[in-house]
Structure formats: C-alpha cells, structure tokens
Length: 297
Image 1: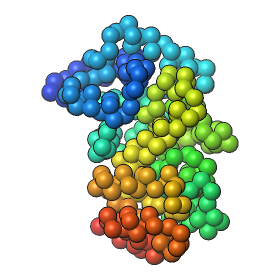
Image 2: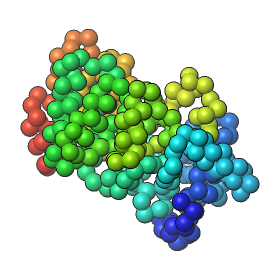
Image 3: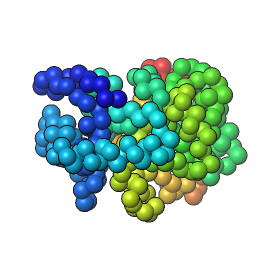
Image 4: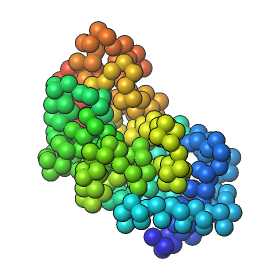
C-alpha cells in the first residue's frame, strides 16, 4: 500500500501515496462538524486537490498511524485505499450529490467496473419478501451482474447469500468502517466478502471509533448515496413507510439511475412512498420481464 500510483484525473499527473491520503482523509474527518456534504464542498472549492493538500503533513501522519493501528487491532490485514484521481477510483461515485474523494476497500475492487445492480429492503422482511430478494439476486447474478447491498440483516443478507449460492458476484457497501461489523451476526459473511468478493466503505476509521453509536448512525444514512451511485439500477424489494431502504432509491432517482419497485409494495395500503417514487420515474415491477427488458435496453 506504500507504492506510489499515477494520479491522472486532474490537470496534471501527480504521484499519489494511498496511505498518505488515508491519513489526510482521517484528519479532515477529525475536524469538528465535518460531514460528507461539507467535504464535498471543500473539494469543490479546491478543484484538483487531494486530501493531503488540505492537511498539514504531521497531522496526516498522526491520523494515518491511528487508523492503521485500529485496522490492525480489528484484524484488517489488507486495507485498500482508492482516491479520486487513481485509475481504480470508481468514477460512478461522481454522480452523487456529495461525491466522496476516498473509498476504503477489501477484496476485488475491479468488480465495480462491471455492471452492478443494488438490491435493498427492510431489515425485517416477510417470508415472501425474503424469497423474492433471493430469487432476484440469484437470477441477476447468473445473468452476470454484480449484486450490491449493505450487509444489513434482512433483505441485504438474503441478496449477498443468494448471489454467492448462485456462483455469482457480490459486494457490500458498509455503513461502518472496514474495522467494524454491523450486525455482529454477519461477521462471518463480512469476512467471506472481504476474502472472496468485495467490501467498500467511505466511513472514517478514527472518527467512527471515538463516537457513540447514536453519533455513528449518520454513516448508515450517508452510505445510501454510494449504494445508488455504484449501480446502474436499484431494486426495492420490500420496505415500510419510514424504512431506510427507501433512501438509496431516492438517491438513485436524483442521480438519474433506474429504480425498480416490486409490485407488492404498491399493493400495501399502508404505504405511500411507492406511488411518490413512481411519480418521479421509478418503475413498478409486476413481472421479471419488467426488469429484464429495461436492463437489456
């Protein structure tokens, strides 16, 4: 990870040291009131800048040491760092309202260069909802798509497991740093994804470690924009009126991506969000062909 990379996404080619940028990114997050929105604004105000351009070297070095110590303590042996301007940085991220400059990863990052579909839904699905999520994940995985989800309990877990069982590919966009696991019950699955597939996270390691559980909830909400940006389409399987699973769909529509909502969501009289999103362009899915035809277009 100490190797230098060619950074050619700006006006001139620069040498880029990923660990130096990691430290600077962590230092930026150590500043009071930092958010993804404020960081995106900072980089808009300093076009062409890397995190290390905006942080004193000694401050960045200190936060690099802290982050790597936390990663080592968590058993994260191979911590990848992708920075805007590096060839491996996923350009799809730029479609988000507040695009991130740094993405941490474990596993096979080039999976994100393939056709990706995000499937999301409630943490407490019905039996039918879980079955539909698994069916869609298996079908799309066999068709060659990389299945993205958030490694939460419920629909997310069904998606990852079904893709693996189908012999396909899957990746998780975490709401925690790579050094943490939520829910704890998915620790084994998280390790498998890191080893055989892909984990990505935009969450700062040091900031997360020093905050309370309530303070860290913001990161679960914010990762939804990344879940949407990395995929060409987002599918909502099942979600309550206030479910966080609706948020990736909203981001996807804002980003000009395709959103599919399964028919049973529309048929639930307690829900108003399906009709609201349909008015904004989301597609009602009554049969599998509704998804297949759009993805084939």
